Length: 339
Ligand SMILES: *[C@@H]1O[C@H](CO)[C@@H](O)[C@H](O)[C@H]1NC(C)=O
Ligand SMILES: *[C@@H]1O[C@H](CO)[C@@H](O)[C@H](O)[C@H]1NC(C)=O
Image 1 (cartoon, helix red, strand yellow):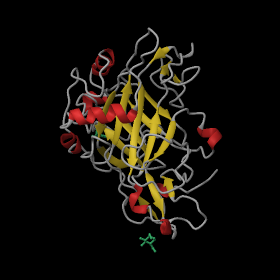
Image 2 (tube, protein in one colour):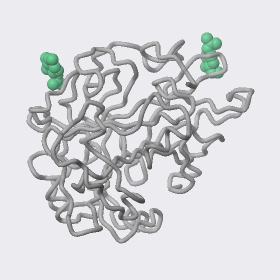
Image 3 (spheres, rainbow, N blue to C red):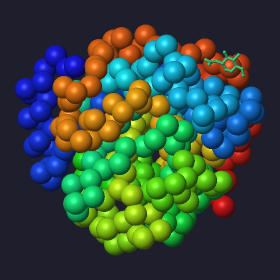
Image 4 (tube, rainbow, N blue to C red):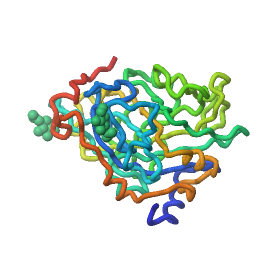
């Protein structure tokens, strides 16, 4: 999968200081940047805010949970070729002093530099306790985070939605719940970690969240136990998105009042509304096999494709609107609000 596996593995081991555990880590390039949301606004052409979407090309305005994306899609942007899931987040914009907005490009992560936009995706099996890891089932979907949140107290309800101010591509410390307050020399990494306990019954829930839960104490990483209401241990799903804010690091471009200039497509200038969406779409039991095998980074049990092949999978925007000029308003007319 990667041309320079030895160097890459050394980098990972030393920089991420991972506990002695296993995880899948892979790249998914951009599929489309689009104002659609088949989870929150199914059937609505022009969801309230803009998203960047990765994964299989069965992503659509509505996605019937009884049909697996892996049966509909003909390609995926992910390097694990059996993964036709869709993963999406909001889109970051720079707000200029004159009030116009410019979309921030996304760049590939360490080891995945050729990736056109997109994200790095992780699935970590549970290593604590004897119950093992139950992979997501056909029809499973979930959301973490809340786009209406604007305060630290609200953001803390989600344990691990953060930003890393990248001093260089390898920075992995100093996570904050809000947007970094100073220019970040190598960009801003948005980190989206999902809850790791499932009620074992519902593939979704009205708020797309209550069928999953965090461990009762601590975090997934510290091995906290799942609550009795949500006893099933699911993999930890985790996205890293590297927003290449470097073109906007000149302080002369920043607001005179000392605030930072980045806003989310849902009108959040604080960063506390960070959120991510997931629609499971792995083929058959491929993900369960990978979890059972405790694959680390790469996984011989899974079929792979090159990043270049992943880059070639894409979709046309359904909602036709300009995303790349200096926009007089955020797509969808979303207003910037601090409450
Ligand atoms: C999206 O859904 C429409 C009908 O709702 C269908 O015509 C179209 O082929 C679908 N696109 C993809 C990529 O599945
Ligand atoms: C607004 O500011 C940006 C960044 O300085 C600049 O590129 C753009 O041309 C300006 N637009 C207008 C309408 O002045």
